[in-house]
Image 1: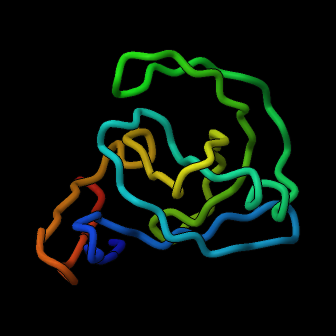
Image 2: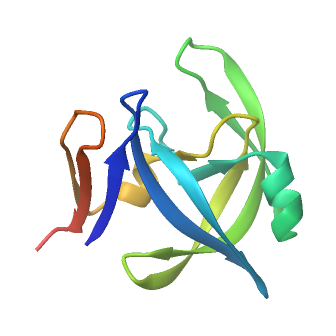
Length: 122
């Protein structure tokens, strides 16, 4: 089980450890159920972690516009285990998407400071 908190902007947040071969960084990510990918990170964090470039991908944004993302590979600690995932480069706050949440229950107490719980299906 993983736990986070709802911030002052009413966003469900979770800290997630992202690593490349010998560099690890804790990143506070906003849980975005409208994002179908794994995780987004800004270019500064991608450069800091020296992530491996995988290629490009096209995504449809919430307003219907298409956008090309640079995609990188990284390892994250997810539910206590290392997991290799795709990271989409985006100059926004880090976003945690539905592919990472697949197979898990998400519970959010939607008040400032409220508990965010992510737990694997039984």
